[in-house]
Image 1 (cartoon, helix red, strand yellow):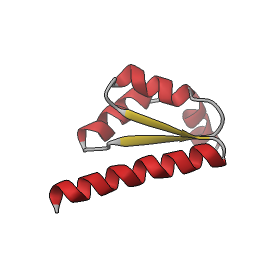
Image 2 (tube, one colour):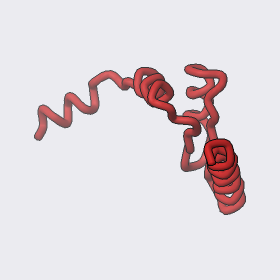
Image 3 (cartoon, one colour):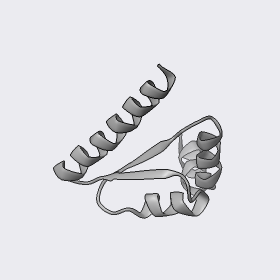
Length: 80
């Protein structure tokens, strides 16, 4: 367990590689949960066209759910 924990703590974070893979397979939106928008900013550094949303309070949750719902509805209309 100690060796695995050490490897996890000291190993490379493959953030950019992970985001690029998600974009390749069709991810359209990324939701950052918590105060601040550091990860959303990093997302913009990887892909200007990627959609980053942030949830940190009830108002931003409502806005994010609305944005995701609107996107799903427009995709359904386009394919339906």
